[in-house]
Length: 67
Length: 437
Figure 1 (tube, rainbow over the protein chains, first blue to last red):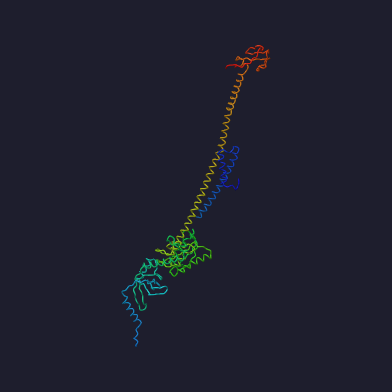
Figure 2: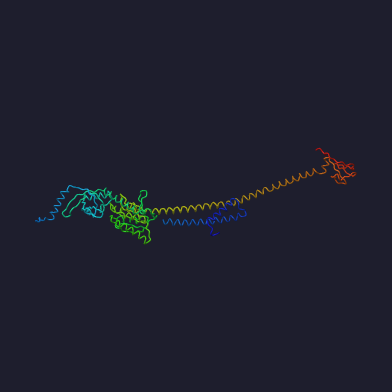
């Protein structure tokens, strides 16, 4: 996975994959491959969200302590 | 000429005293005068002063004056109702009696004092100062919709006031009130204060006060430090010296000050010119301190509010991202299976439909074959003979072209079950219709 991939780019790709799978515009031959890519993107996005959340909570904690 | 026998000084003064007493004993006079050389003795409660009348700078008349206890009570009432201290420089309208004392000389004793006259004089003096400011300093003081405006009022107050120049008497209770309220604040705000000691009593201090403002300007220029505000305070005591703050020099210094001026001059009744031209005027030094604290508190609260909004928005944003990711994830786990199932169903349908499709195909083919065969059967020679037709053969060949037959040729006429042997005897053309079908 590209380390410079942004959350927004990943999410956008994920949305495109989801809609092409939903509309069945993806060929059966590519289905497994695309689904694998989607799974990777989901893992990436989740990791990013968890990291951001813990960072935000840390900052909030600091802010609340300084009040 | 013989010299009359001299008399003792006391005799003379007694004579003067008697003469004046007889003339003035029952007389009271309302006089207009200016107070000069005023002094007050708090232990006894007596006021001593001179009543003067001037033309320009020269004295036209002067009588020493005194206010004993009854007069001092009148003066106290005057100070309460005007808000103006009884002091040198004020114009008064007072009722006096005239006495003469062998040692202390002529004295006008204050009996009553008219507050309205002094207030009127103060207002008049103030109007003259305003007129002079408008005329001589139009860049610093001007009228807008009949409201007095100043350069200082056009400045912008910083959102946080921390660096302050405080002008006032360092010993005054007002300055102590201010310092205490500001520095002992419950929010633990920190201030940098430069004190500019300046006497804020008596109209003659106007030039000195203007000098102090000039010092503040210079200090700022030299150090490059901008003050967030200049605080002009005085306080302590019920009555106030309005005169200093109505002077031209004072008013101009406040109006033209390069930093917002906050006044807390400590009077309840009236606003001085300094108040009218300052950035903001508060009643007391303590109120100035509270105003500054409030301004800073307002800023802190807005920062805290922004922080709270920031937190809420960050959390919301994260929550939304999590939700949409979860939605996509669940869609993705269901959809491919659905896709595959539908493909399988299509295959199943094909499997089911293929045999019946083939059967139909065979049936069609067979039917087509049958009708072709029937057609062929209908056209067979046997069928033709059966229907009663005949044909001509020559040497075992069916003759379809009459040209192949010549007169005398041996021919065979084939009918159903029989063959008739014959010869060609005659050939004629046959133009008529063969059959009426």
